[in-house]
Image 1 (cartoon, one colour):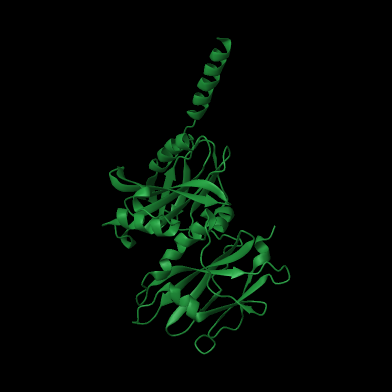
Image 2 (cartoon, one colour):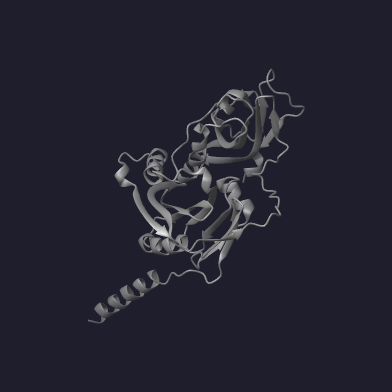
Length: 327
């Protein structure tokens, strides 16, 4: 009888511990797409420095945080509302997630379409891998007055993941657009930010290298290069044109485009690379992501970026230092 009571008490305490999550009283804030936002993180989550989340998720990320009680993390992207086709958005995004995460049946990707503050909202859940561990990815797309905000929560696949998603839902749905962003810009000096001087152009195109990142999956190193392409002609182009115009070398080896390996870390980059196939009209600019296998040779840590000499002129080579990301 005493053992049974002890067991019930332990079970009761376990249930209480699973229900104890709540939102932080202090609101987290960030700017994106020209506007200012606020929302509430779960109270056990800690905001990251910009250099950390931009290094992990790319220069486009505007906010990042991690859970101090589990191996869970998140980041935020924003997009001007006029650039997003909202008609059919729900199913189109579900189809993209199916491709990115390799789901055989689209019905296996959880999708919810609802409203937050009178505006459309969409939520998706997939199971993926991060550092060879199972993890649950919850993607929220929240439409505000002027923007579409994408909040990506990656939740550890542990005994509390089913309960954790409840507080993640509350956190995402607490988002508010509260006004225009301040016009004063601050520079990020992280290794991911390559600098606005890293560009080349001619009468037809301009390429700006905006950042780079190295990841390692199953002892194989990969390089992701973030860039922008500007189209100056009447001919429609896509960011994928990078692979024709840019030549990357590591030592004497010419790098070639690589497929994305399995795993959440590479999956994040694969999502960013979706824009490679978007059309860029005259006068427009679009971001892209190029992905390569690189050698782990410690004597060859510089990747040189050159562009076709007969089309582009540049006085200095662009160097990407892989040692920035070495342990």
